[in-house]
Length: 89
Image (cartoon, rainbow, N blue to C red; front, side, top):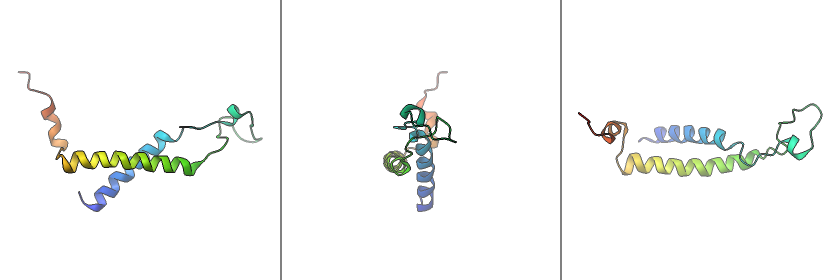
């Protein structure tokens, strides 16, 4: 895997993890009973975006490490998937 391929795969994993982890620990204004005039009650009370980025980076790094180990160290690739299931002829 080249450096650019690794960066691209890491970016895709990071972006997917961001949207998966974004609602974790989120408290809405409605739950806090502090709805600010002009906002929706489902808006976050305290967004804490940097905490979400930090969590996402940790999870994405672990997932990328797992991906790297499986594909580069173990030698598993997309061509190996059909060999998981035996021929039932």
